[in-house]
Length: 137
Image (cartoon, rainbow, N blue to C red):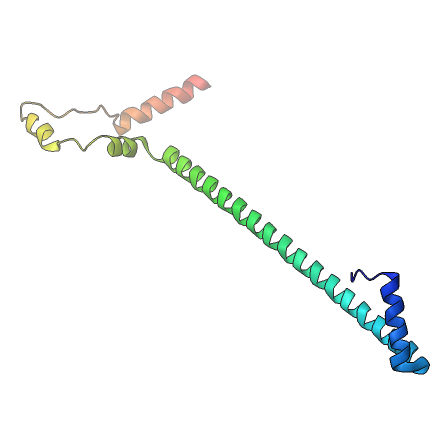
């Protein structure tokens, strides 16, 4: 960490012995060791915290990118489903311009009789049902 060699430590020890004396030097060395240990732990904790924050930010960016991709795919699927579920007449109306209805009504004249659909009267339908029941017995 400090890149201090043996010779530098020896010089620091001799100066400390001369300045502090033999009674206070061991206590000062212990105090200096505790402070150096606290500084090392603090630096290590800060490095871990910074790296975890960077990892969290990277994960957040990846998550945002994946969320954006999923949203795009979901919107595409929604458009496809809506286009598929849309009735055929609506699709034709959107793709073709609206026909001019006034021309169609003008061609219909009084000479064209309205079409009649055949219906079964109540008595005839009852007879048909009873015939079917008799045949099944």
